[in-house]
Amino acid sequence: MKDLWFDPSQCLIDGQWIAPSGGQTLPLFDPSTGEEIGAIARGQAADIDAAVGAATKAWQGAWGRTPAAERGRILMALGRLVAEKVDVLARIEAADVGKPLKQARADAVALARYLEFYGGAADKLHGETIPYLDGYTVYTLREPHGVTGHIVPWNYPMQIIGRSVGAALAAGNACVLKPAEDACLTALAFADLARQVGLPDGALNVVPGLGAEAGAALTAHPGVHHLSFTGSVATGRMVQRAASENVVPVTLELGGKSPQIVFDDADLEAALPFLVNAGIQNCGQTCSASSRILVQRKVYEQVREAMASRYAGLRVGKAVDDLDVGPVISAKQKGLVEGFLDKGQGLEIAGQATLNDLPSDGYYVAPTLYAGVAQDHALAQDEIFGPVQVMIPFEDEAEAVAIANGTDYGLVAGVWTRDGARQMRMARSIRAGQVFLNNYGAGGGVELPFGGIGKSGHGREKGFEALYGFTTLKTVAAYHG
Ligand code: TXE
Image 1 (cartoon, protein in one colour):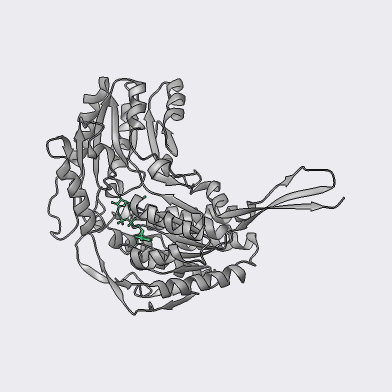
Image 2: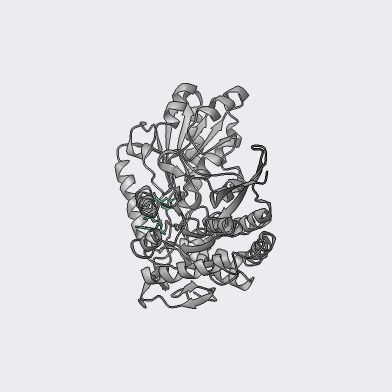
């Protein structure tokens, strides 16, 4: 690929580009065309071991001794370099993930913003003094865990690296990053940019490879002190099991089935763009995608018609054509989504985009809106991770809450109503890590703690809260009489 200035068939370990120990590669496909466009490293346990070794050395050495303010400066310099490279990073991501250029660009801008935020926060993370018995001075120290392992999926590589690696480095950890085999190019690009701004060798190591090989080796490595994982529930379970063997903390972000709830007093004009966009952005492959639209009966038909007409107008195309929706990431993901569409047979399709003149081997799925879906139907319960939304009618507030809370997940929810008291009641009643009132997503919100409950996972990323997660608290009690 012409935009790459590095060789993606190598790993970046201890500040050096090196071939994976087994000398093997994995093919790289462009989701927009299905064409093979290169090869990436197939890292193995030995490469993970070398990366953990390098990270240990950095944490105990140059990076560990770097003052917090200087760590912050390096991260902010990295953020500025990322901001300068937004266009090239967006092109790389668009080719690798298949997301329309505008959306890939937004991810690169968000990565720069994460680095600015966490760079600025690095020297503002401190402990406390605690009043105690006569003759004692007690204080707490917030210290890095040490070596942190980061397993990142393919849907938003840059944003997830920003919120997880950005926060971990700010807190003084040294990182080993295992990006997804389906999309690892911007992870490698990011690590190379970090090297260019003077991040000490070993503070950030990247080993691409398969989940069952490099990923499993990272989760099982006894030299890793904290794991953060974003991905499926099934893999999350394995990661947590592996973490339990070494008794290390783990942050899991496992997706959701997030609702937007539209009451009959809502500002529908304001709500409509959010209702559809939050379902089809990144082709629906978003952990916080709003895949369920709950609508009060009085306005149900009106919302159904308006959403249907938006669906009819959606333009699907290659990432470089920069339309509303691109392909899904892989042939495997296309098969998964089509499996759900098969389960939808017999349901009412309220709206659907048309697929015109697309490369026949690209991984395209027609964005589809189902109406009148029963709460217990698989399409209303399971994470689809494709451009598919279901509409569910409800009578009153109590029923809306019951439906909203009626899945195994609890990541995000949106509530549309002009009634202020109802807004407050809904915000308290909904089981989710984030609730948005009269908006959805709050523009991305680097500053806003994010994470789930139930099968959406545990632990919080983003905002200051993430920094606490990437530190361990030490209490020092001094008796001086
Ligand atoms: O996920 P995996 P997949 C959901 C979404 C999607 C489904 C499958 O519903 O349809 O998961 O996607 C690494 N030890 N989400 O198969 O397997 C893997 O290499 C350690 C939601 O891609 O969870 C990749 O880096 N690591 C989600 C990462 O885990 C392992 C984002 C995610 O892959 C591993 C992505 C192992 N044994 C998918 N096996 C979200 N929450 O946003 C795999 N991996």
